[in-house]
Length: 111
Length: 115
Image (cartoon, rainbow over all chains, first blue to last red; front, top):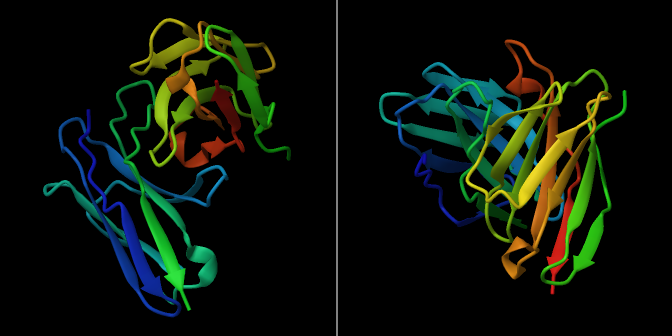
């Protein structure tokens, strides 16, 4: 398994910045996905990092350090609609395109 | 372009029964993956079908089986249902190729409750 570790819950204030961390085992690693999942809904794709560094996409950015087995998702200018679970998913690329998801971080944005 | 659809939306079964869940992949996608998501957990990979063949399987017992049809829609069958099978079942469709996983789209899921 990937031994994926993310905080279970986080709370942040509207308009603020929040960083959601994810650590994983580096063996057989190809890339890392972040998905957003609102309660009762399907996960939706946020980002995919293959190379080290920060990738920015609007209010959301994702960082990867392959050697450290570490990634984070950075959410800026938080909005109430950002309240959701954020799933970290390392990808081994071992032929079957299987994604292994972490348990997710439930983010609550408060006024 | 039609997205991924799943049916039924909700389902209630009793222990020992069998269930079939259905997924219609997004237009142009030939690969379907199935995931089980228990409450408060991340999705767990069950298996994947590519061009009607199983193309990888997670740590699920044989009573979880599947099919993919020529139109790339798919079924997940679960026999001898157990209480722990209660979960949200998600399917995700994608197309093969270098950007395969960037194009993986999830359906809304089927909520299965086993009593």
